[in-house]
Length: 203
Image 1 (cartoon, rainbow, N blue to C red):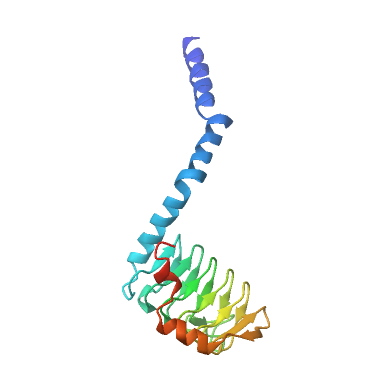
Image 2: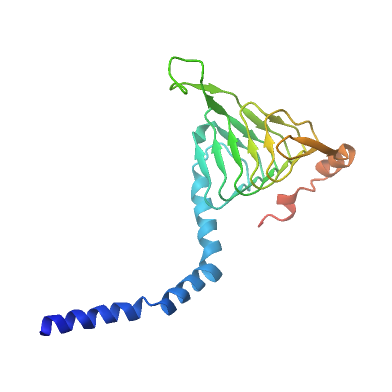
């Protein structure tokens, strides 16, 4: 009898502690106070695993980097949370390049002409080279072997399967070139050091 009563009291105590009100308060605390701090801390931890990096680089949250020894970062680079970099074949990212969230970059692919299907255990390595001061939007996919020139802009959701010339602004799965930046102005701003991450180093 007493044992049953104690179980009931304990169960009700647990229900009180973990009821919806308490959980909601904890979630509110996390969302408004802790979430950005946790994301920043996770990004810092991941970035420490990258041995070849310049100054003032930032990972803005949890980023998956496979074969990190194949990743080389210039100065003042930003990469958004949720991004995935498969650097087995080599990924080079030039200084002041800004990469948004959920961007996928692959520098290797499975071999489909071997002695197994759908592919064998070998990789075909094709390095990806991204120039200086490139802006890559959210949810972009960059395929193996692609070279992206300085100052290019890759619109949100674009699948990049071929090279992008300096200053080109491309969008969509068909990689449409909608415009080319003023490369003379780009060069002037570059020489003057008018770089996003240098001007706003905390962002």
